Image 1 (cartoon, rainbow, N blue to C red):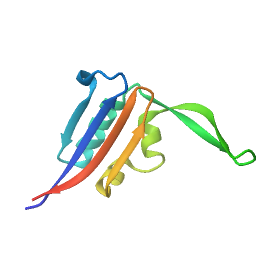
Image 2: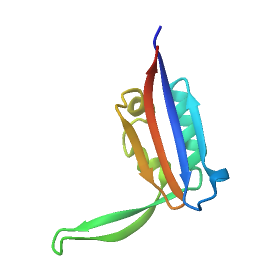
Image 3: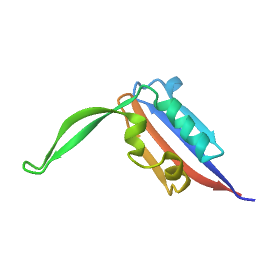
Image 4: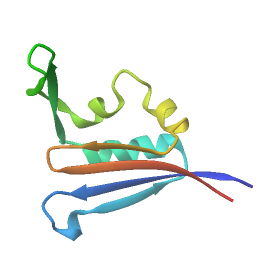
Length: 102
């Protein structure tokens, strides 16, 4: 019997290993809930590409959870996830991966 597993890892930028965390979820719904808890209060500084000058400039801060999934359904995104989904946030980096256990 195959089982999908989602591994959610948070790497804190402070360098304090006690602030790093790894969670394992048995469903996409549980993975979305874990990501939501980890990213609560986290923000992402959106970068805007200036085509005229060929450079990036800082944009507005966005809630990290909403930015990670954009307009996509989070459960569907994680159900169909191939490889890793990662995002750098204000205070760290989140990495979500899906694997199949036999």
